[in-house]
Length: 137
Image (cartoon, rainbow, N blue to C red):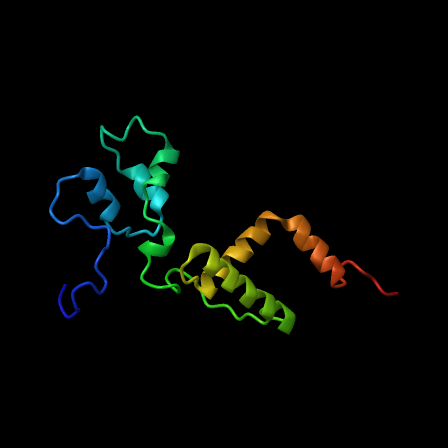
């Protein structure tokens, strides 16, 4: 790499000269950002017999295949009530203790949104608690 210190921006999963085809495929950057489309487009005789779940388990996790937490994300304003902000910070600390690693606040927020989308009945109940669905005549 030119203009960068050794290690900065290098692929930590790149093979240092071995000829293991699985490692080489996993180390290739994904141009489209879709790991599933890249996995389905490339197929070798060794991988044809594998099911899609084993292909997904061999892919580099999202945390490691991006350049930063803002990669592939749009900025959106987020306005939180003080008690929500406190709960968010407490949750962040708990997860960092659980993983024994730093957890990005941006990742936590997106995970909370994604889990919320999987539990719309609970989201609906919270909105009703806040007054949605009420009418005043």
